[in-house]
Image (cartoon, rainbow, N blue to C red; front, top):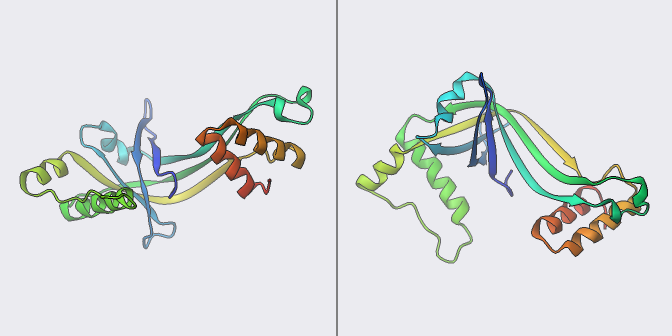
Length: 190
């Protein structure tokens, strides 16, 4: 969640779920599992449905296609996909006051601007600040449960896992390389 903060937010609602894509930050809190903080455009109807049901934030880490041709015995295999995801289940609380909304905005700006040569700072004032604050809805997702799913060829032999890592490195794409890194870190290969 910290390394891949752009999440798909899903709120169960009849007749169909509400779905949005937003950056979320983990925030330690008095709640047992912590919370996620974020905001969305007030024009997005999703926020009006938060009270209607549970919400899940889906975080996607690197993922990549895996060809059976990479295995020692490709004739005994099928194509697949390696991936890592986190599903954060919880209930959303809207942030009603201006000061807390600004605090969330500042924390998010600081997080995403950090490390830049000339980081932008939230320094708006007056009408510009009010226009921005009035155009968004800040929220906290109080975490009830976290499910982590890792599919990193752990069902394959050590030989096949090493071959997959090597083949992903040869793919020379960011996702393939990052998936190989995850396989080495979490499946102990390479």
